[in-house]
Length: 284
Image (cartoon, rainbow, N blue to C red):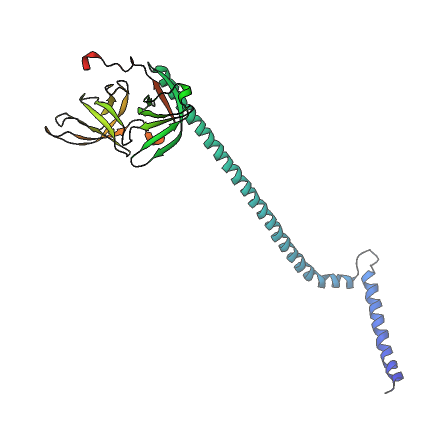
């Protein structure tokens, strides 16, 4: 078959295709007399509708997922912000509580200072050194504040110890629990005398109390004033445990210091005169 014949055979097909395209185009853009789309356009729209609906659904899902992601991310950031604000509020509340507690302690120290018949210096604990044999603290007042060696140190709860080291602006205080500390003590009920000694631990021991004396757990122990350091009548501690003695053997008495030596923050240093420490002639 020649090239010319082949071209003649294709011509009718091309004309038909061109005619159909024109017809579809006219049908697509054509309208009925009353302004409504024609039937062919309706068929096309009907055929395309499921595809458009499915595509719209996928778009809605994608949009919903993206919106949900944005919302979750915003909620997460908001939660982080709220947690940070909550943590800050807790810190602020803790600081307020600490300030109130410090003010309360200071008020107690001031009340004690005003009620005592002795002059005194209020001081804060700024350091602590302790091991099995030595228990000492450093306070923020020294020689320039009128502090002297061997002056007794107390709190509203009871006695703490005595000054054993001195500088211009600070002083070292030996606690009752120190292995080398001691104070004359008297049982508040039996009125028996003894010596309260530090043993390098949390508790002290009261020694040289006759095994014939009645001693009860929880009984208070006060200073006797006989040691020349602590004035008479200050609270030392309480009987924690009693190892009963006999007529020939003293009691073994474990003493719990009243001052709470492990948590000291503020103390009073007593500025005592010789007259303050003078012992009544009847008990010498």
